[in-house]
Image 1 (spheres, rainbow, N blue to C red):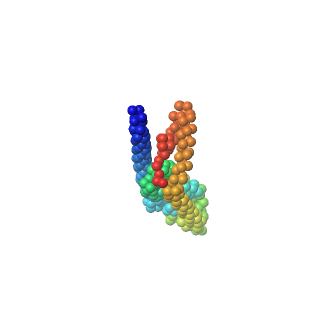
Image 2 (cartoon, rainbow, N blue to C red; image 1 turned 135 degrees about the vertical axis):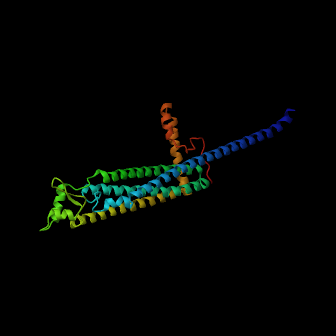
Image 3 (cartoon, helix red, strand yellow; image 1 turned 90 degrees about the vertical axis):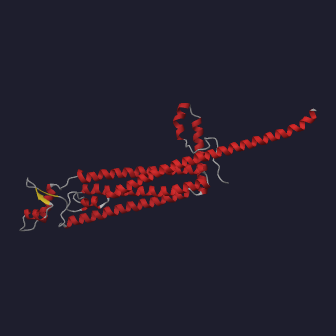
Length: 315
């Protein structure tokens, strides 16, 4: 009887082992699907953050361009306006810095909007074709860089607004009396009185104490015209250089982002990235509890090795 029971036990054991393997594979597949769903949710959150960043950058572009509008620039550039920038070296200095910061602000925002529009498409394609974990990780890295660009753009916009207020209300609206009187004496010819010049040129006025002041430069003075033309060309050249430099930098950044989403480049980077995250996780795991709780937040949530498994990628 015992010899008849032994052959029947072997098939039962093999079937049990087979069902155990099937259950293990099913659990592993379910875990992989769950991780993929979590990664897709994270990718959706990152894309929402990029959408918000792009909208804010677009709004800043509109406000920054309004600083270059005619209603803002006309009082600053007219040579007979009390707000003109040609009247002294410190007016020219603040105006030059103002124009440069506006150019930097607009350039950074344009870089953000352009790169975000590409990342939204490339990240979805990489998640479907290459790996969801790799797409989330590289998108998060790019989002950190875009946040840095936005901080630069926001700081430039804020400084531009402050400089515009300084140009409008913070600087003297007229030249010092001695400078105005010296220019008036240079313009005065023989047989012509200072009162005649003051009445003919409305920008030069005589104060109650007998001194003279001028709103901006005198358009009849060749030296003033040369200063205005040279500084105007310098400011225009500086802004053009800033815009061209930022455009070249943005194009270089765009090429880097496009290269990072290519399948081979993405997988190669993700392997290195996972190794670094695994080392961080092991280092945190070896620390005491209090210190571990402070450093554990530095480990990226896309590190699937810390969650117990690696994301599946097509072979």
